[in-house]
Image 1 (spheres, one colour):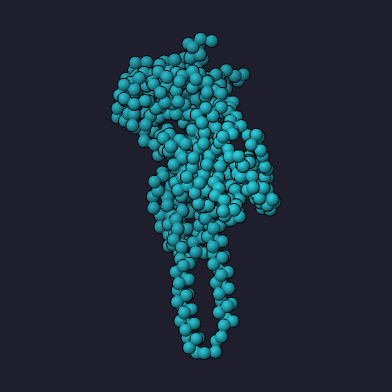
Image 2 (spheres, helix red, strand yellow):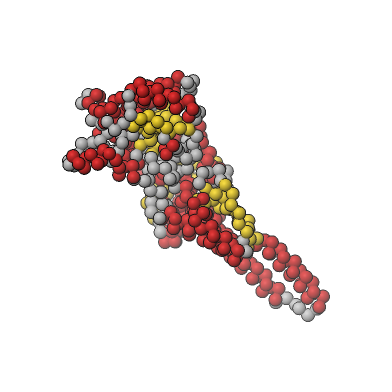
Length: 502
């Protein structure tokens, strides 16, 4: 089939539907070709006259700015190329090329364009095991990534970096793929589902010293407690270069839901740290080698963000540049304190599952499972506070019992004890005052604002809200009695779960 014939067929695929049904589908899909260009390449004021000049040059029905496609937390301009006449697809593609050329002429840097495609077409564009995307990259010599879904943003972003001619060739191939498949209103209506750690099944692999793995496998209670399956594997059972693994290392595989695996590895890190105090060990996670560049991110932005979230853990991807074939593995090494390693491991396992859904997150903007990550982190913090509360209460009860059994005969001792107990009570009250903050959706706070305020008044908890750096989120600061603050936090998290389900 010639290129012109491909253009003339339009984006609507052939089907066995009746003409009336096909017409309905065409009227729903207005053959929109959508893009987003960041402000660092061209401003909205400079882009607007270019779009109008190109529209007149190629007699396209509409080439205009499209504020509805504005990507959250990313400065730039969205625009769409629309024409109801499907025979004008070639003219619209030529218009795309002209726009890219004019933008490139204004810049002395490599051009980066974000193409926006319907969520329902993502798997088709990526292809089985990423074969379609790899084919486009080989054909056009561009850097191309299908990005992770952005929270509350319907379209999927495809980042394309290169010269204007190469970017156009890549865009042209994507359009031809969409044209062969056909686009319907259902493709635009489809939304990416958030990553739910309690439903996603994973097989996480770790490299530990053999003596550590033997100790872990002996603790059968771990499997029952966290509903996971522990397996020991040899080095030969994974496809990784042997010089990346130490001689005395073996492989531990943990099977289960992502949530259960995260909890299990947290407990394993804690137990191993306590048991092998003289052995300095780091966490070495085994992941697909083709995820290495995604985990690192542009100029290391992704791996730095994970390290910051893990309170300063050191994260290093041990991968050679030629370890990018599908089916090959690489190591991610995590070092730091026990808490650092726990936090970083949870985040990395979660991020690996995100990569399986299409690609890395945008350098700016939110990725779709951030709510679940924050919710999990908050729930863990609440559990930690409960444990500390229980430990402190048990220690206080022991002290009380010891004090009651002491000699109470002398008045002087009673007075000294009473005065000291008053002071200790004051100290305890000060220790029990909790000051904390959580990050929640602004829409949630607006929805339950009255209930939260009433709850705080009843429990004598002071609450304040502040804007967050991330759009559509607020920081909620709480201060008051530990138990009361935990009650308020649990209420907010429960309401957030309900909102997410809806």
